[in-house]
Length: 110
Image 1: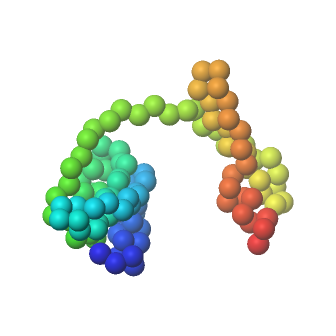
Image 2: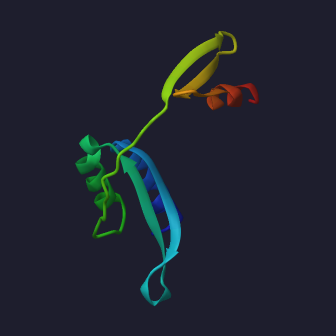
């Protein structure tokens, strides 16, 4: 697959319900270069995501592993209206992380 095809595949797989998609360059048997696709999705989206992988990539097989996930609690607070600035607060037990929303910061540099 070309870089353009990989980019399109990533976009289509994300649209099918994947939470994240990534490619890792690898070497297959006989030293052939390839890309390993990694996809994170919720169980209820698995069939749609698998269909998108088959439709938009050259693969003919998918290996998958079910995993458990733990997430920090998340909260978004608006701290400014003009320009809009949102604060993302993540917490787990006694751990707290606070950062400005990247997209809001990006708008300031335009």
